[in-house]
Image 1 (cartoon, rainbow, N blue to C red):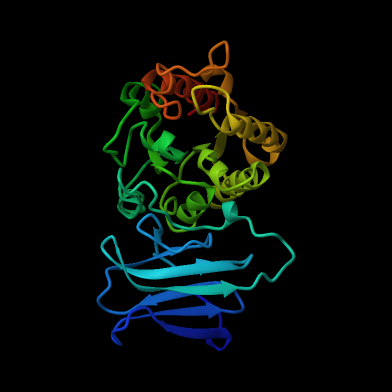
Image 2: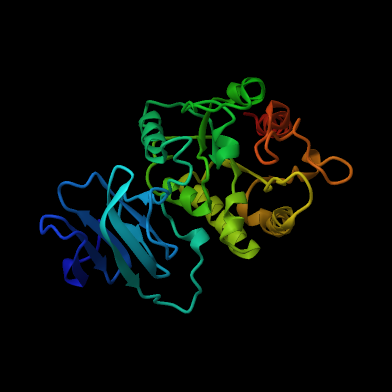
Length: 323
């Protein structure tokens, strides 16, 4: 899978005082791919690419880490929620003059661990989309807004069952929404098997709102663009409906402004990214600029009434494509 062994650099660091506990890392200098190895005894490894030490909210290491732009990997062994020993830090040089954008650097996450297990959901999707096991015609991709809507794989929290059954279920969908996902997490999932066994006729993408806490508007849009391009690479014949980032917060705020700016930028790139782009922001904001709890229960996640807005647009678009 990786390049010639002679290009490998090896580094072994002890992450606990006991000699039997060591975390190893190999870096393929030719491909900028980092591979981690754990010693026996630890349950798993968690890692970050944003410079912070990994804790229980950090993603589980499931596959070699591709860092074509370079970056810093911080990793540690965990026994359940408890970190075992020290943190390994490995800096991978940036081979180009391009500035690192975390929104396009695939990584796992566990930020929503109080609600669901990210790895378990990933594994459930891999089981659903084995060749011949799933006949999904429409793939919905996104964060918690998509995750909590409905469908398979089932979520413990479902906020839009009626609208899902009315508008989405007839199109034979699969729900690839994950709570707290950012564009970089979607990229990791797309590149690690989540659509490999599927032959969908259309995708619906809604992602980006969680990136605003760590990324600029331009970086976030680049992340969304890369998600759409990755879908095109993996399902070149499928249609793609891209939804604009929804407004959030009861009253106008900085995050709403970022969403509006991102949506305006996405509109200029739609010909490259999607077969259709729809910005539904105005449908969620009442006169005076406020969002009601009747539309979004926490001013971020839609109620069933809020999902009706998206559902109707998705349903109309899919029917227009003959689906």
